[in-house]
Image (tube, rainbow, N blue to C red; front, side, top):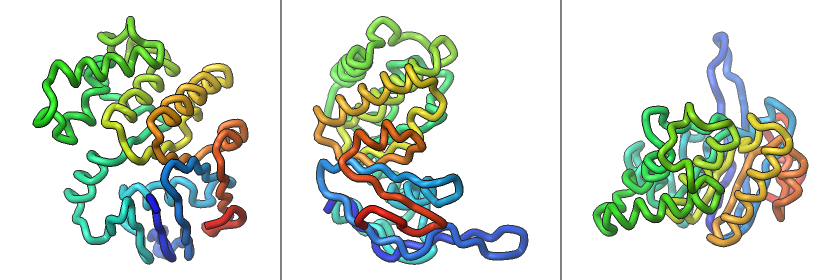
Length: 229
């Protein structure tokens, strides 16, 4: 299994009391699978995504990614593991404003230490090619402030796939976009994902996007309400 989670729970302190956000979540995700996590606001979707991606530590339970027990890694170790194996697409794009589109796409490659095994020119060519695939071949030297929301998310998609990740996590990738632009982003993400054979886990309120995956996991009040774990 690419992802194996067992008995995940997460709690937070709020106003002097303990708030349980997730309770006893167990699931497996196989190689090449596309899974959407859906549910009402406050059901724990983004919290679960963060635990599966190793961005947060669970209060209880365990997560294995690609056979690696995330609990066995410290924060730096988890960051290095993500850099080598995982791509991300966020609702808020998360581009670095002082970098051009092509420089933003190069960031995960630099974090993964790809410069040690591939020339800078080859990496830049890979980044430029990805930007061309998402329709931004003529905007590679533009800064995020010079791009529309849809164009910024295209840059984010190119960045997510730059390191040829085995896993892609997406958190509301169309949440900040209008319906027409969001549909284009969905098509691009699915096309890139299919070509790369990446395992995809995404959080969405968009039924159209969820319907494009081959598995839907529904959460309610921090537990799995529907969809095989």
